[in-house]
Length: 202
Image (cartoon, rainbow, N blue to C red; front, side, top):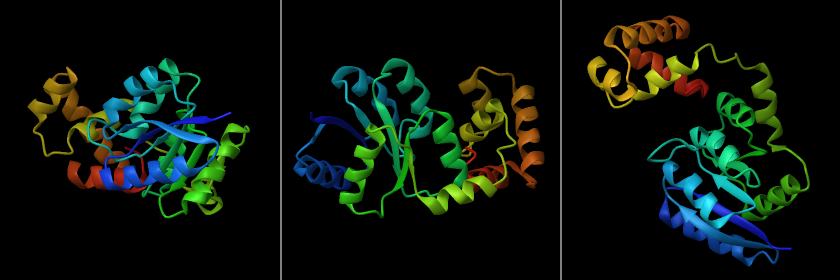
């Protein structure tokens, strides 16, 4: 039986190389490739892959943010995160959103293929050192809304712009930002965002 694979990776050269290498595997076929986070779920619904290999840092939405919709709309598709960001917070978010594997791009493609087979056999595949780090890392103190507001501030948007994007009042946005700053021990929202990103909380 051939495993059908969806690749979600924004670097075109890497995506093409990965697709070519996986297609060489006798039991694997890359059936779809996307370069944006908001293309993951539509591609999964259309092509019905068995596995989605998902990067985290994508234009059009984080790969992590796509996982809940992927689980709802393509429940037969198993998600595996493949990223350069080996952060405990990202691992926790990925696992809580239903991912069955968390791998880094430094690994050889043969190891990736083996990990795909292990996941489809019912295992959860995570690098041991990252799993240990996740157990000792602090839990995410931010609420979903605080995370959302911090993410919306990434491009330096002013409070009014954030409020418009998220359909919130400006005072509510200020409250969420103030809470996030306090919980991260930061001096301002830029520092709060940087600390939250460093921990993999947003």
